Length: 247
Image (cartoon, rainbow, N blue to C red; front, side, top):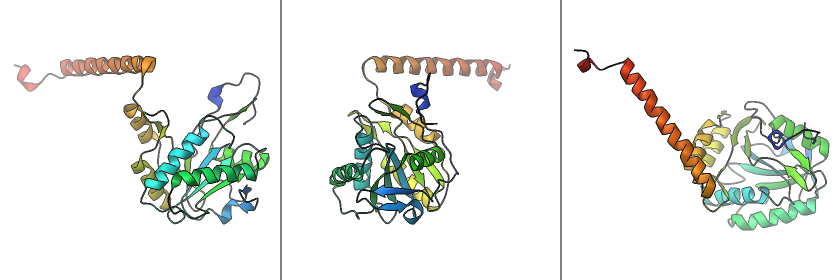
């Protein structure tokens, strides 16, 4: 599903939510120290999966940085209340590259955090394909990297997918994760509760502050929406006049 075929477009690099499904925990990946580890041996609490690739020049690092900022600000404790797994989708990347990224991100977190609270993995193509397919994370291989979406996937201690957190965008041009969204996702995942993503999508639509041409488009859409709602309300009022107007 993740290979670039003739006629494929960027829209195939999408996320298909598989809420309630379980990821395969019998898969092994290599951590930043070069040790192979089975997922079932480390997923024993709410776990956030971040699919990425370490040499990415696009959204991977900004998403990690935003997550690191939330980890630093949240009163939840990494390693105790939840774990984070960054897993490369590029089978050619190495543990050394994972270690370099880990060192960078741990500096951003800038708080006392257990060494294994946020792990950075690489893997073979088969394991990567099985895990991403099970999680509904689709991507398209390109000449210089991979086309994919930025999303955080929350799984419980049994590997059940409970939440997809799709970050919005901040005024400074990067990703934006609300601390309240993050905390709720972790807490609900700890109970094994499945949470739909629609709430986050609505928050993103109304909190997004576009600029330039995007601002004009957004304003036009908003204006048309207001006119439409007003028209509907007028029709309803005419169809259901108040008692005072019935003579």
